[in-house]
Image (tube, rainbow, N blue to C red; front, side):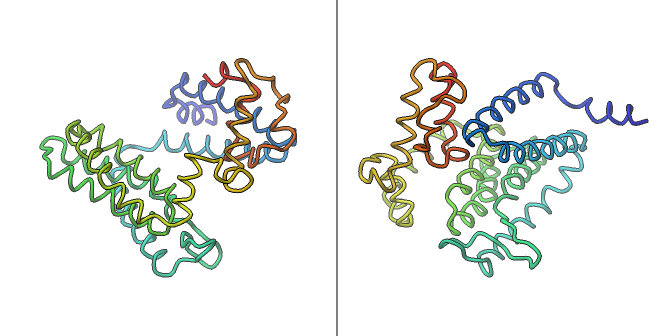
Length: 274
C-alpha cells in the first residue's frame, strides 16, 4: 500500500529535471558550508528547507490542473485584499510597511502574489485563448500592475520586480506582440526621468552605488567592491573548495546570502561559474 502510494506520488515527476535540481542543490550546500565558515548550522537549516520544498513539489505535482484553475481567482483576490490591508494597517519596520500582524504571527502578503499573479493570468488566458484580442492583453496588464504597484508602494521594489517578472512571462508566452514589447520598452526608457524622481532616496542611492561603488568605498559601496575583489581573485579555475581567501577571512559581507555568488566564484573560478 505504501509502495503504491509512493509510486503514485512520484510518477508525475520528471526524473531528469529532478536529478538536475538535486545536483545543483548539492553544489549549493557545499558552497553554503564554505561560506558559513564550515559550520553545519546554516547547512542543516537549509536541508530542512529543501525537504519541505520537495514535499510541497510532490504535492503540487499531484494536484489536478482543474483544481488550480478553480482556486486561481479566489487566491488572487485574497492576495489583493491582504495587500490593501497592509497598506492600511500593516506594521512599519525599517521605514517600510510590508508585514501584516495576525496576532499569533506576521505574514508578508507580497510573497503570496509571486504565485497568485501567474496563476491568475494563466487562468484568464485559458478562458480567452480562442478569441484573444488586444483588449485581453490590456486587462492582463491591469491584473499584473495592480499588485505590483501596491507592493512597490510599501516600498518593496525587489519583490515588486519579481512579481512583475512572474506575470509578464505568462503574458509574453500567451502571444504578446513583439511590437508592443519594443514600444513598451521605448516608453519605459522615455519615462525613466519621471520614475527616477518617484524613487525613495535609499533606492536612488542603491542605483548610484551599483553604477559607481567607489563613491563610498567604506560605506554603501563596500559590499560590491569586496565581492568584485573576491570574484577577480578566483581567476579562471578558482582557488578550490574551502580555500577562498576573501570569503574565509571575512572580507566578503553577507556571504551566506546576498553575496554567496562571490564565494562560489572565488573557489571555482570563471570555469565553475560558466
